[in-house]
Amino acid sequence: MGVLKFMSAEHVALMNALLAEAREVRAAAAALGGEYVWLYELTGCPDGATVYWSATIGAAGLRFDLDRPDDPADIVVRADWTELMRSLHAQKSGVRVEVRQEVIGDPDLLERLGEVLALGQGVATVETRLPAM
Image 1: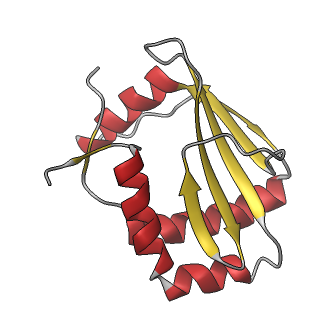
Image 2 (image 1 turned 30 degrees about the vertical axis):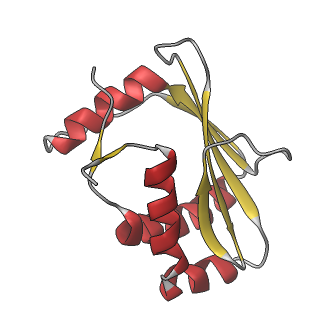
């Protein structure tokens, strides 16, 4: 199959399959007591489009999608796509580069959802191929 393209439909499907099997992630997500959406809104893509990545966190666990949700998100993180990709490329080389971002939403909820996302990252991180820069 080769290395998957970062945040492609195949990459997201594999992450979701891994997350569906992760009891600890489901338990942490269910413990939040509701269903929440965390939306990444990335502008500045090479084709001029805005890219959306969303994470739904709730009783069913954690699930990623590549679409903007119909309902408003509880947390929105806005950033520049190119800046984020440069940061991810640097991270693969062991260098941490901060990305300027605008975060909209309740800071307490951001922290609680962030804990579940971090737990999910530990379960569903797979090798991917980042877009060329």
